[in-house]
Each structure stands twice: as structure tokens, then as C-alpha cells.
Image 1 (cartoon, rainbow over the protein chains, first blue to last red):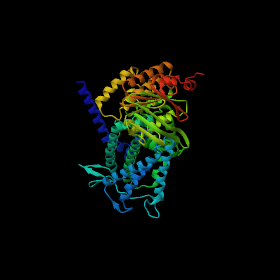
Image 2: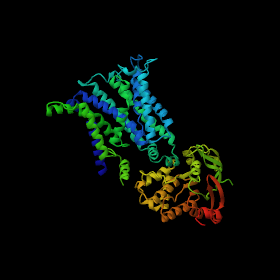
Image 3: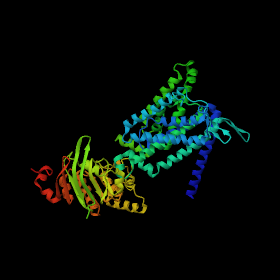
Image 4: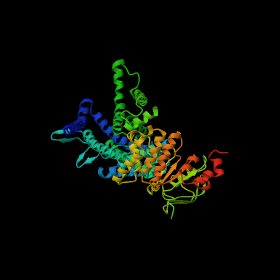
Length: 354
Length: 238
């Protein structure tokens, strides 16, 4: 009896969550406006990115500061194959996997020479890799115009499901869904797939091997774990998710340029993981949503200053980064394991204190 | 009969520095052998080369007649050689039970793994009550026991132990060595590396003395313990 009611309540809360997620863009549209729905779409993209980087940093313990390079690769592959730049307009279901796979391959290419590096050294090499890709994108407009340089690539095709484009409104039974709404549902579907894969990885033989490598690489090798292959796998899996998010980003914005893929972006994604709770899926999701939406919300400090003081003393753009910085410092001081840490991470920080 | 482990003319160098030179030793099936020597004599280097963690410069290593040279550490572990690294090497944030299960990582025979887990717990009763605790919260001796238990979960034929007495209180050293003896009695061959020569020679049947990367003496443990040079250099007698 107890089990049945528990099951029912589980299904009940699951149903409630699904309903909430389905209605969320409409609530936000009504309360905050269309631009916030687009922001929500972007937040979902960052959830994919953060969950991808979480595999590398959170699970395998490899500090990667060049993660944005894979994001860029995915975005450029999409732009090359679905824009007037080369006159190619391939369907998204062909390009997205291709971009993700290519990013995954580059993940292995980055991983292979850095296998012997750890911690700070690995961070420096990956940082360099991220910059190399960005600078390539910036300069590969001559002799052959591959990336169109700093101007970037424009008029990238939106994702089209059958005859429905995610950039056009769609009317179903007399009700009109905006492009931003449709994008939300599509991204949400992909986010759920990425969460599912992450969960399966975390509780698998591979996931346990990653924990072992993170904790003590020599002991891991001595228990028969192929540390080389598993580290490469972590790089490849993380990069694949990065490439996927890149393709989605290109189709969503319709325009990409190297500027979108700078070091700050890598650091932001890393912050999402650290702030939310490294290696813990709910924490990482929360961190990604928070760090995408909070800086936007802080833009409203301008309106607030005007209504209180009658004029703007501090430019909201400056104040926004200041408050954001303070918030980061506060979280790291008071919740060093992250806002929603995993049990194991909490343990790590409890150990460090004693 | 071929020995279980047979090492011949093993040399290991770090850059230009020769750490181990022309080392030959062997361990028979089920035998307990120790390698003693002072700090920096090349003991840990030898063990790392045997387990594939570092590459040997030259020489051959054979397990059961099969060459191991050039194989990576994980492949050597799969051949039946289990290393208990220096300084324990438990996974500190994993629970005791998770650590033990990691030992069986290379195995897929679930029923036998469950049976071996019970065996390990009965060998190490102190760990039984702490199976849900993170390994990092155990005492040094308990961590050493856990590392031994984890190695046993791989069902090794040969156990390589790197300084199991290091940093432990005398009573704990006794307890750990009791466990090592019981493991050896169950038929697993042991190659023990120790600075504590007295204890090592008392525990093992045979021994080798390593000095600046070369084996200078070898033989029956009781004879070695009686050797004036060994008594003088390692047993603290004038």
C-alpha cells in the first residue's frame, strides 16, 4: 500500500514538473516578455554546455579551460553547412551530429598529448588550445575564406523540423507558438537527453572508473583501469556535448563570430559547474540557469536606481559585473562545495576542514 | 618448475640517473619474498617498473612465463599482479565498500565477487563495521588494510606490497603483517618491499638486499638476518 502511494506521489510530482516545464515559457512570456523566453532558450544551451564540461571536470577531474573551443567547432560546422557562406543548406539532423562528432574528435586530439598533465599544467595547455581555435576562426578568412574572420558568418539556417522552422511562429489548433517557444521545447528535449546520458554515465562502470582516476590515478591504474582510454573518453564525451551546443547556438542566433567563443566564455561555463556543485547533475543545471539568468536580471538595477535616486549613478553594466563578482565570492566562501553539492563533494570539503 | 615472477637484468633510469641496474629476482608460486634496502636504494622504482607504472630501460619481466615488458599498468593488473602502492593509495572519498568493489573492477563474475567480498570482510573485521564510511576517514593502519583488501578483490596471483609498515604504530604494523601472512597462507605469492628489514626477514622465506640500484645479497631470510653485513647495515647492530 505504502509503495503504491509512494509510486503515485512520484508520478504525481513528475507530472507536475513536466507540466511546469511545459507551461514555463508561457508564464515567462506573460510576465517578463518575449526576450526572456529567448534567454531561457539560451539558458538551456548553457545547461548542455555545463553538463558536457561537467563530464571532464566534475567526473574525471581534468581541469579544462579551453572547453569553449568545442562549442566554437560545433557552431562553425553548423554555419559552414547551413548558410549562404558556402551556399550549403543541409538539414540540421545531419549537421548537428556531424558537428558534435567533429568536436568529439578534437576532444581526443586535445586529450592525447595532455594525458600526462594534471591540474594547473593541464589548465594552461587547454587554455592555449581554446585560444588557438578562436584565433584560427578569427584569421581563416585568407587566403581562402573559411570563417569570414572577425565579421563572422551570418544568415545561418534555423532548425527546421519537417516544414516547421523554429524561427517562425507555428499555429496549432488556433493557438500560436512563437519561434522562441518552439526552440524552448526542442532544446528542453535535448537537455533531457543530455541529463539522461550524464546520469547513466555517473552510475556506470565508466563513471566509477572516472572517480577512481580523479582520486588517485596510480591506484586506479593498479586496479586495472585503463586510465589513458578513460581520460580520452571523458574529453571526447564532454567535447561532443560542447559541439552539440555549438550547433544549436549557431542555428538559434543565426549569426556567429569568434567573439562569442573567448576565454571568458570557458570560465563562465566552469563557474556554472563550480558554483552549482561539481560532479552533481542538479547542481550543474542550477548553476547554468543561475549564471545565465542572474546577470540579465541585474540589468534591471538601472531602472531601480532611477526610481529610487531619480538618476543613474552607476552604469548597470558595471554594477552587474560587480554584483556578480560579489555573489561568486560569497558562494565560494560560504558554500565552497557549490550550491547543490553531491554527497561526495561535501565530504571532500568536510575533510579539508578537519 | 618456472617461477611465478621472474625478473632478469632489469634496469630503470630516470633521465640520466640510473635508479636500478641489472636487477634479477624471482618469486615462486605462493612464496613470500622480500626486497630490503635503505631509502633511495631503488625499491619503489623496482616495484613501479614491475607493475608497469614506469617503463624499464632494459631487461625482462615474466609472469608465469609470459613477458610483461612494455605492457601498461592496467594490462599487467589484469594478468594477475596486484600492487598496493606506497602510502596506501586508497580512494579517500569513496566508501570502504566502494574501494573494495573497485578492486574487482576487472572482474565480471558477480557471484564470485560477492563471495570474495565476504571473504575480505572476514579477513578484515575492522572494515566490516566501517563499510559505509569514506576511506579517507580511516586510520592509517585501517587504510593499509583496506588497500590490501582491495588488492585481494582482484584475485591476484602475485601481490606487490610497497612499504606496508610505513607510518604505522608498532601494534598496527603487527596487525597489518598478520593479515599479509594470512593472505600468503591462502596461496597468493607476495613480493614485499620494506625498510623495516627485521620485520621483513622475519615474515618472508627469502630475501634480496638492494643497494644503490643493485642486488648485493640474496638468500634464505634466516641466513640473511644472520649475515653480519645485513645485521650491521639494516638491523642496527654494531
